[in-house]
Length: 236
Image 1 (cartoon, one colour):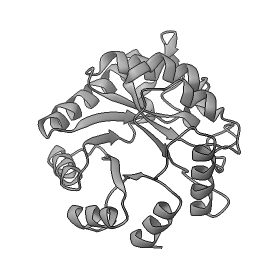
Image 2: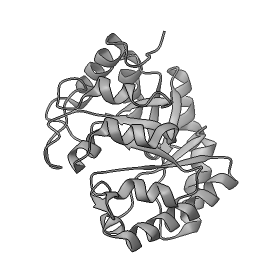
Image 3: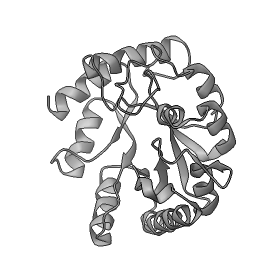
Image 4: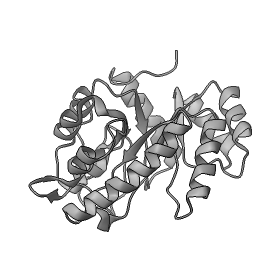
């Protein structure tokens, strides 16, 4: 299924916007046009770091051209959170990315997986990372991966406070990383409790990395649950 049909289904499910992870071989303005035709906003854009910073700068330029105002580092290496020195090196990388994003008028954040969560010097490595990065770097908290990593995601977003500007809302067994996700509201994550703990989040972004059922059916069920329970806002 190509981007037009997938976006049709996302719009029909009642979503207000999407988060991009590349533009599927489309020019940024063409991708922006697909969204506009369906009344969808570009909530944010995942822009992966590259060893070639010229390539990274070009990716940031493309995100801005597509209409993004917020970009997200999708991941840093797991070994970048193994000890305090590694966390500092990871923060240095993010700070360099922040300089590039800021120069383009883009806010930049970091998206966690489970490997940033284990304790480093007595507290989750992710929190130590945010202590070290520029204060303008926001958190896109993946609440499912936080729970898989061993913390209460509500406590995590509560400690991050206003810095938790985006939430990846997903659900599932939350036991081991290899498990498939499920439609939001059908798994082991206290979705209502976590969202209540993050009142400053600008977007609740449904993301299912993998799913044993039809992915877009699960995406639609997730929207129905979130909006129906009054936890998120859908399109009018």
